[in-house]
Image (cartoon, helix red, strand yellow):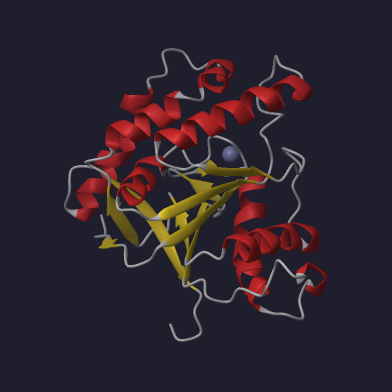
Length: 244
Ligand SMILES: [Zn+2]
């Protein structure tokens, strides 16, 4: 397996933009715990509330359960800011409306790094990725550029919001084309607890004997082997600065 390079950690603010509650917890949460432990600010933006994610629960109720689980899950890894954009779960479309919504969040939070989930066509070998993940990841890359251009979505630029063009990179966690990794050995347990906070969702999946610790240990150990540490989380890095 190809070696993974260590991620740059010389930044202060990161905004994580993902489609669903639980997207951060299936692999990235231990890395988030590491970074908040270093004193960095990290915010979560959930494009949907994952309201279509539990077969036996109507979206009106499901939304409430899943938002509460996500907020609790985020707190475990030191994230206090969790925003829900309320776009429709399962039927997100890549396009200008999604880019507009994400550019606004980037202008509001002014991050150095934007983190998203894997948006390649597959994950973990030949498993097909989910449509919302692909739409959000592609829109994140564009929205980072949009946020820095005062002539794109200019109606957002009022007294409170200015263009923000200082995002250095977009990092996509668990991409099959990952090039970098971060050591999560010390914060592995927080990552497990963060996934376990999605109890109603995991129960709703109906996976027999799912063990969050075992699951995360398997993927973290495999990544760790490629990074020269016990446990690690993998990221594909997209440099966004003009100079890079
Ligand atoms: Zn998802």
